Image (cartoon, rainbow, N blue to C red; front, top):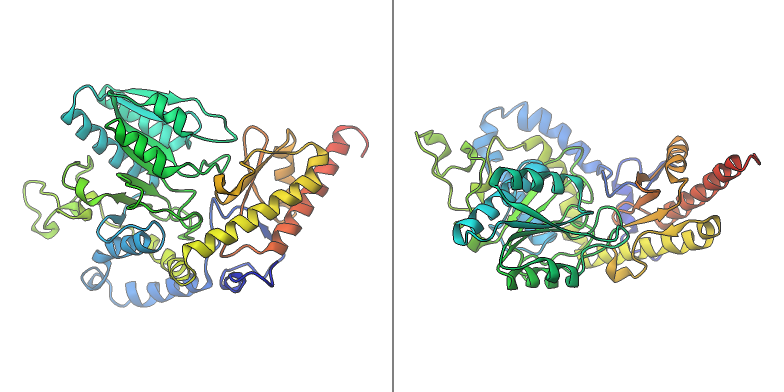
Length: 407
């Protein structure tokens, strides 16, 4: 399978890929590209060390939009001027969600509900709860099965004339359920609501067509499949016709029309830059450009095909090796309903995860009893998946024997 893999040659471009360590957590923190390590050294010595403050005028002020446009073009199929690199995922979620509900209430005071599912990522739920409390609004919860996610039927039942905003993850963080983004967007729009997509687990793994699918707003992180590094800044997408309609709530000087005028009043920049606030995190932006170059070269369709092959292979091995030990699949079995990771369920998985880490096999664990296997299509090999699932089988057998008093 590795010999037949048209993307196999990218693996050698990542630090640590030559070692025996099995990395099953690329959907939480991607491996660093070797070129990013070299680039950061060059930046520290030349870009920062030599150019100093001149770097802002020469290049850095434009980076949030330039890199945002690259993400728009290569990763989420959005035309230029709609995507920007900004703050953390949490802060950008707050900015866009708060701006959206304020605009909706101003348009129609009845729209005082935010629709979100019970298994959305914690930061999404926490941010929306805070906004609802701030603005005197109500959360309408969609109760979902944690092995799947929000269906069109569930959303259609939840939205109505009081809905201001819908927030959905394109790929569910726990199960990897791949939401029907165009259909859910249509349902939200038919109800007069705006929709904000969380792309954290899909950007760089699953094709996204933000413009064609009619997205209003989206936020995605860059430290998973885009390999930006720990805490690298998130990106925000705001459809061009909405940019002058919604007002972002954190008014900072980087989002002003003339930031160096430093005038007495806040006057927002008319472009996507209006969604910036404070000084842009330049150091955190640079590594992701190396992975963006690979995505531009390979293309998202090829990455998706490799991702499907990897997750399907993992499921086949899990069925053969782990099914007889009581492990069940906690992700969609059909590839068209599954993102870039696979979750395997067994009550012993917390202990199995801890022991695998001691053996340099690195998945992660999600309650209840979920071993989550994140497979990055640029840096993961099929042989690596085979070794990792074999180790999981052996460790689980040992744990079960010990619990039965037979080892």
